[in-house]
Image 1: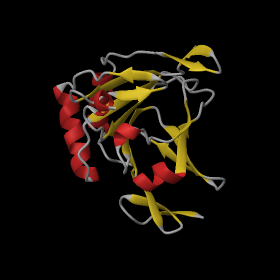
Image 2: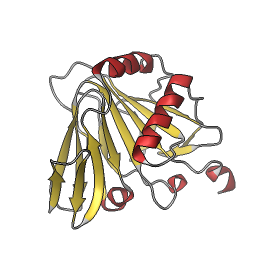
Image 3: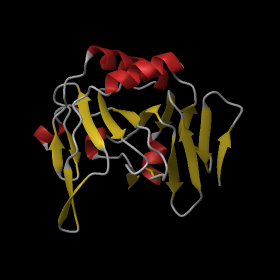
Image 4: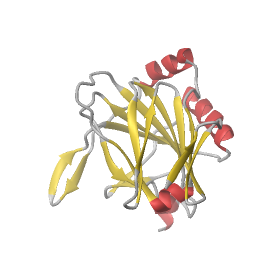
Amino acid sequence: MMTLDECLIPQRLHKEGEELARYWSRFLSIERSDQLLERCLGLNWQQPKVRVFGKEHLIPRQQCWLGEPGCQYRYSGTLLEPDPLPPWLDALMLSVSQHCGIQYNTVLANRYRSGQDKMGWHSDNEPEMGSEPQVAILSLGQARPLQLRCGEGQTQEFVMPHGSLLQLLPEAQRRCKHQLPPRAGIEAERISLTFRRITPGYWSRA
């Protein structure tokens, strides 16, 4: 059984004695979140295609991969080269890194233009993330529920408001999957900034 310790700041999610996640519902102020959302709209958004069962489909959202030089990321068979981090995003990454206790060096930004845009069940455990993969997800804009499921057990749902932060620890990546499901009736945008630690040059040596 998973339990969420409501009395702690951050809130901590455990399963069978293992810590899976830490959650801050008000990591940033409304004013700071508004500023970041406006800046994020100017990123180099793309909507690549992925191959599923032999057919190509546009991913159901927009994305942008940013980070330090050499931090390539393989996604659905495509090797992504990072765009340079603008100073404001580099400063934000440093702040999130200090808060979470890990030195992130890349950001996968996802733009959900309405409730129809989504992300399916997955774990962030790509080999370039090393043996202890973890991510920190900063949510901006429209509140959307992010779901976490471990095996066949219960699904924990985090309704992530504007300026909230969720840190998924290595145990969550090993034992669980998470998704952002579609939601009918939502017209406003949500942008998530997913901070990661990538091994520089991993794919050039592979």
